[in-house]
Image 1 (cartoon, helix red, strand yellow):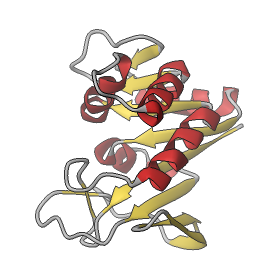
Image 2: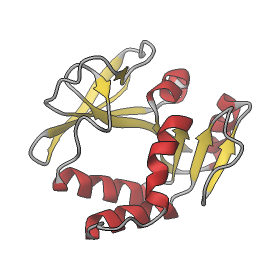
Image 3: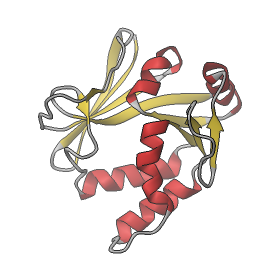
Length: 174
């Protein structure tokens, strides 16, 4: 049985915003290794559209960016959307019976399955086994919160500084 892990970068005021802060080289390396070892990823539409950037090589990419793109392209992806009619390479569209389909993936696969997208994660909280908050010392002001619905009671199971400015906080439902 797979473990569903919800993890994103988060500001001190609780928001996720991929434009407000970028990972330093150490955190980016951490993400490359994480994607390499995950069994699959589940994306909401908006997050998938952001991440689809990695589907095609971009001019000026450095070695780390090429490594990340390679790992991302190899990983099976599941995209939850009621509006998309197709998705890119190595991706499967889920448009109906979302909870049942995620339960099926969790039962059939082994390893870690990341779920990415705060709205999607908020709708599937009963299925999430672990939360990984990559906390950054920035204030974004109004934005999309990491938790879009009240989380269950959580228990801290780990904290790890990564790079010069982020700390990964790991929680499990209590």
